[in-house]
Image 1 (cartoon, rainbow, N blue to C red):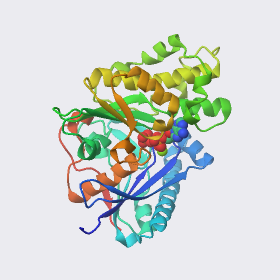
Image 2: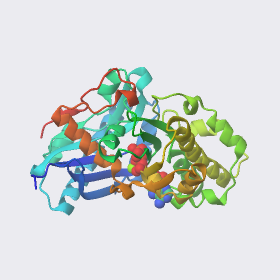
Image 3: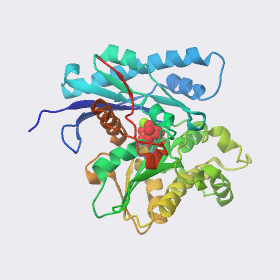
Length: 365
Ligand SMILES: Nc1ncnc2c1ncn2[C@@H]1O[C@H](COP(=O)(O)OP(=O)(O)OP(=O)(O)O)[C@@H](O)[C@H]1O
Ligand SMILES: [Mg+2]
């Protein structure tokens, strides 16, 4: 057996649920997951991050303080992960750390993932690769989604048309058609609107298994109005975030008389239909759909997708040997390895960049 090449991937996505860390051996073509660890965000940090999505007084200072806090939390989560696996920091080649997106504005030429990578390197003694999206945007791309290159490398089948759907805060898909180059794009809101709505009305962070949504009735008029947002019909490349899909956006479409559980049922249908429509229009002939991200646990959402796509087999990515909860963290470990190898890791057909680029910034240990 070859020597292991150990990497840590750290993902903290738009759901603002917390920090996913994964320890990988990337010496073989298929990554081997050695250990994983999730650390939830405390509510005050989540609130502070939500505030930073909107312009505010003294936001540069506040953003830097929160970046420092995040780096400390990333470091603590990494050290717990390594402790679980009984691996010393010196054995790790690098950490690939996505950071926490607070603005995603490719149309203005930037995206911001908060992190203090220098502090993370200092606290862990491990080299850190971060800021994966900026180079793709500099080359004219969306900077997102970046995971399709990873899906292409490890989840493609030579003869079967697969689609990988990640349902995080935002949902994104990767189309792996056997006879075509890989494509992919953001489909729309994943969990973030459902999370925000149940948090407001029931004080819960998310709708476990989608149970609350099943207590309500879908509001067809509201669903149509929400789906009339031009993002849904726009052709790829496209990416999105809380900049567009947020409570202000949702409230602008409500009349205020709706029963809260009916809105939840409609938001679940919005996530489901935007994914199913994207597959029907952009991935024709898809045979197998593999789900990952926290939304893969939403039983009501999975049932909605199965109804909407009766000709496809739908299963979690675990059916392909990759646990649905860790795909994104694994992908950022892989992206870190590509950076150290000097390999381009964006797919111009996905992001719209003018050319392939090596991604990320390196902070040596
Ligand atoms: N058992 C469950 N039932 C319903 N929803 C769930 C369940 N478990 C997790 N979720 C949803 O998944 C979300 C977290 O998903 P995930 O961590 O994949 O998203 P993320 O951090 O935003 O990542 P991404 O980078 O893909 O946006 C939670 O906020 C919640 O909405
Ligand atoms: Mg998460």
